[in-house]
Length: 473
Image (tube, rainbow, N blue to C red; front, side, top):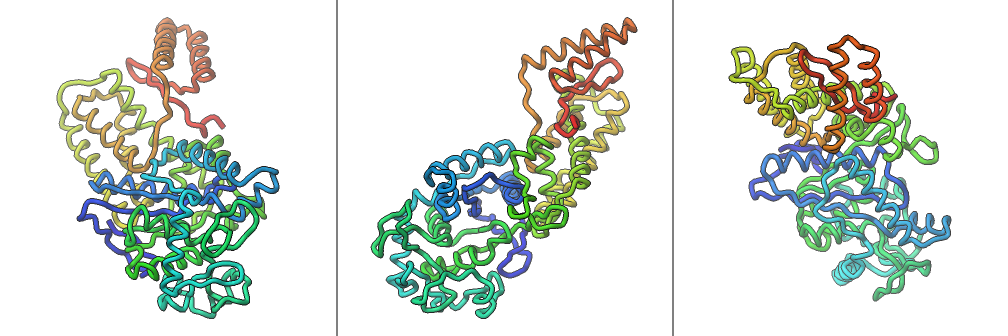
């Protein structure tokens, strides 16, 4: 497995020989609903994790929640409530969105407010090592104590001073020094040896990453907007304390733009995941988020979404063709001379798919292979050819592996609904055999209206599939 390391700008091998890969992903600040930019970052890391696990590695995946922050407090004040209620509300919103997107649960979701003692201890140790000091407004990290500062973002001292958001405090030793602890009387606050306040943003992730994964982790990542100052500061304070490499590899996901414009709340062009789920469904969102290389910007346009819908329709068609035959035992004896070479071809596609993903998560090429696989299945079943058990079960198993790694999931339907649908299809086919097309068309319409299913007539049987959200538009 090779990934682009932001620290070195090189493609580097992930060491999986010890069998465990430790990943820390910077999570969201829970003051609002998540948007498509959050979805892209988390889905990219979800596919990385799925692939590593399929290849035999145990992944310890930590993703934090920043549940105390100035934005959370401001939101609480504007809504006449408290910060805890705001953070809890949007944490629940997060799980609704990402459960719907079929994102695997992290090993742990640490929250900042549950780790205040750990944060205070971490800061205290930096103070003891003379790498942090007490200023007028808080405790600051002494950037001059860490010679490598700027190595991740490739920024020099002057550009950091001119371009960064610098806390105003005349008592700071260096304008680049950043807050580890902020003195405050605005609740919520916590007692510390230096005075009441709350943690700075950057210290939180250093503390939680090292607590759950140790001082030297395998992969640390997030969106590219976190490279500076957040991840730069994490490196400085973590390596300043532990005096060892904080993360072997830094992985960053490109931003999502909307019709070539930067997504921002001030411009009113953010797209919430909850809204997009209603419009296009989870599988189209996942395929969109994986449609270009993760290090590059990704532009959201209606044309791209429409093309993504067509890709998902092709994948879902292949799934239902295989699922229906498997469930109804449409199997025959031995593979004939045509099916056996095709089966070998389909097996090779999965190997190529994994090979592309193992080379810096090249999902664009991997998806091309995936679509070739599903196209071959759809073309094969467009002609009513007998299929034996080996071809059917092996091909369906391959498709499920493609879908698992990509995180795609078919909509769930109960056995009771399946029985009712198939009873109605049986009645419809009786009417068709009697050339009573008016009644058969009525049943088709009723099935579409009640269960949102599409019928596909084959020789001797009728296949049905649930229609995706985009098909309803």
